[in-house]
Length: 231
Image 1: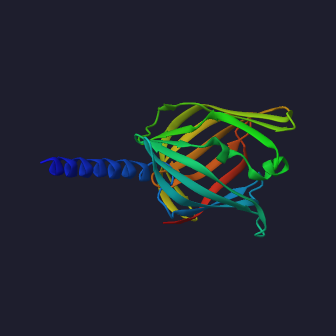
Image 2: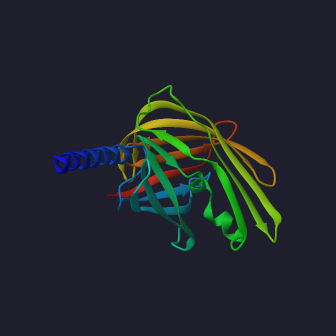
Image 3: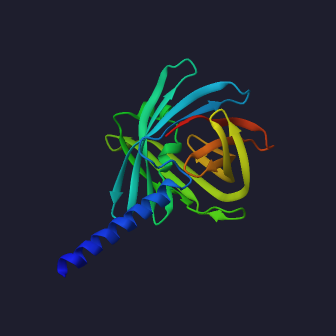
């Protein structure tokens, strides 16, 4: 009898785990191991500024959900490697949390290699269900670079006013996707203050399909488009 109850508990635990992973894989960020995608960045004039190659290299179970590691390789339009690294995504109770350090351009961090780094903040949340009119929690990241106990750099980024605007169909070189359109406001402090507004389109099981950074007049300063997706 005890063995039977133990078997039932193990099966139930496995079923819950599979269901939880299914919720993660159908969320608004790519979460399946082996999934790879290419994002192409464009400048204000529509010229390619860089290309991001990303791949989910590992998915593991954590205390209250799952965690994925995503590799990141940034190259120029000529194929020259500009930077490479990785970032994390966590999925807990159907809510995905994206490490905000993934939003920092790794090239800008090259000058701080070998320094002591202190990083804190809150991840960006992506619930399993997103509907027009919905507001999402803010996100932030604070980073300090030091050497010999002396602070050389203080940087902070706050993302606020995150809203789900609409459901829209978006076509890119990677295909046609049913997306939620989201907007947010960002403020970065580093040797001064810079504010900008971003509009992005996310597809379930895929992640970001398109994104535009807008100036004060609504003009596109830069954009990012999903150009390849492999699963």
